[in-house]
Image (cartoon, rainbow, N blue to C red):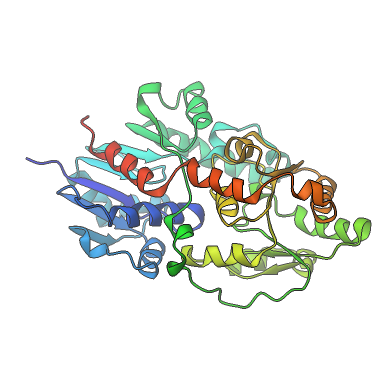
Amino acid sequence: MESKYLINASNLHVGGGVQVATSFIGELSRFNALPKNLSIWVSNEVHSNLQELGYDIGRFESYQIVNSYGLKFIFSDMYKKMNEFDKILTIFGPLYAFNKNFFSIVGFAQAWIIYPKNDVTSLLSLKEKMHYKLKFFFQKLFFKSSDLIIVELEHVATELQKLKIAKFENLRVVRNCISSIYVDRTSWMGLNSEIKSENFKIGFLGRNYKHKNTDILPLVKIILFDKYGINVDFFVTFTENEWDACSKDFKSYMINVGPLTVAQCPNFYEEMDAIIFPSLLECFSATPLESMVMEKPLFASDRAFNRDICSSYSFYFDPLSPESAADIIAKYYCDDSFKDSISLSEAKEYALNFSNAPERARQYLNSLLRPI
């Protein structure tokens, strides 16, 4: 009897996970030959992005919209169907599964687990600390129960081994990359609202998670004006709930364009004069590579995860110091020699060669199909 395979993107509803799943499944739809007995489960959000980008999902033998939300999924009928498969690739885990009869492959992108002592913890309330501690304790247990874990950079594999979450032979590195949409202008979609500003425009593309460190942005804006006389407008891409949860002060200094689909992201980058990525904690983020491919200067937090991705093609600052961020932005704005110290065309070439979407899709698929 031939093996039955499942690619599971049912648990991805927001952020970079949706982008990766859309890119991976979209690239698969372009493959000349697809394996038999391959099923695809996608969330509403992944399905919408695949449709918007015009991928031919009809090429898949079995394609279903399935929405799973954490542990609640174990009480659903679709959860019971998982044991009908021999191998399941969950693009980003953990996969909350008990008594599984299948070979489970999961993608790992939870930096809180591998770096429990981090810059973000001190910013949390006691209640938040307890919540995260409990949450990631259980997530770690489910990751440990996986048969194979896919990570996006080598440093993640190293830390998973140190923490005894996975052995060397149960890990595989598949580098993240930009989506193919960034080299295909015909697939770009316009923004929902026009961006109007005569000031220097700096964009932040991402969710408003605590570790993204967006609270420093209003302070950076104030320092740039008070210390350097530079008017900067910061644009963010928060959901309605995220924006509502922001303070009045934050809202008064920031401009929110709302969440973007995958097809809208290139136009957001194109509208900006520069991109800022002040994150304190990541396994990997595609934002730096995307900004480089769009030939936009990148101001990034001076952390190892960014240097691993960006090399010498970013202007780095101390993410715990708004003054440091403002100083580096002002130096770029005022000093042409400093501005020219990073070639945007060379940065684009570097990002394009970092990895690519078709190769990533092949590596994911090979991981699913390889003999146990």
